[in-house]
Length: 274
Ligand code: NAD
Image 1 (cartoon, rainbow, N blue to C red):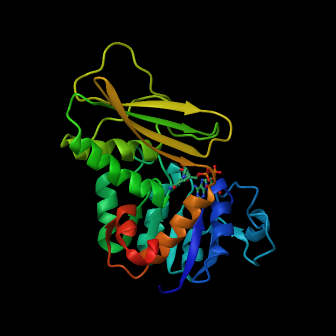
Image 2 (image 1 turned 180 degrees about the vertical axis):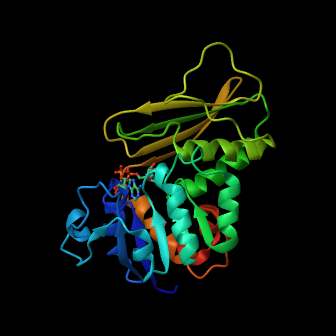
């Protein structure tokens, strides 16, 4: 696996700090840029210290184009409002980009993502855990195998600070279930949580959302049939799993031809799972 110099956008956040810590375990990867929002209290601070480690001699900046100059790949774990600018900067610098930020569908159209992927390798990963990548595949297969009388519901729980709902992972699981059933991607429910009144619509894929405490991320896909149910679940107890998966995916992404990629491409790559 070739080495890579990486820029982390959102370096001062929960995921950014987990990425900085995890990067220390991967000799092939070096963090050369740490970006946060211009109004962040972390601007000018050492990114290693922010992550609870020894100083790394790298200050947090808000200048992504400058940070990209000496980098091979960028990882975006910031906020949806920043996604368009992050894509534009990576496109201008012709640098591969992994977008781990979730909830940007209202900010950036699919066509814009496709256009960017003409110029750069673009990996969109609402969940960078390898376990969740496997769950996606299992859900697709279960939805294909089980008859239509099994209702599908996506249950998810996250910490109290999470901004988007349902989670990007819950939406991706619903898409995977829809693909398995051969039906169009379900519409995400409006509002910050999903609640229902009245009976289910035929073929509906529903969502149930819990927000509280410091839950890192729980997802269950429930197939509820007459007299039996199947549940496929993943529980994250440590943000480090997302960080490790993201860094390994970033290593995989650099040097790829321009195009759209997903975590399923990484799971299929033996050298990453091995
Ligand atoms: P956070 O609020 O703790 O941190 C956000 C970071 O983004 C901060 O460093 C902030 O300064 C930076 N930021 C905000 N606006 C910016 C801008 N305009 N330009 C540059 N930087 C900006 O958030 P978090 O909990 O670390 O989550 C970050 C994102 O990652 C969220 O969208 C979350 O849903 C997503 N996430 C993805 C995965 C995954 O596996 N893909 C896992 C966990 C979280």
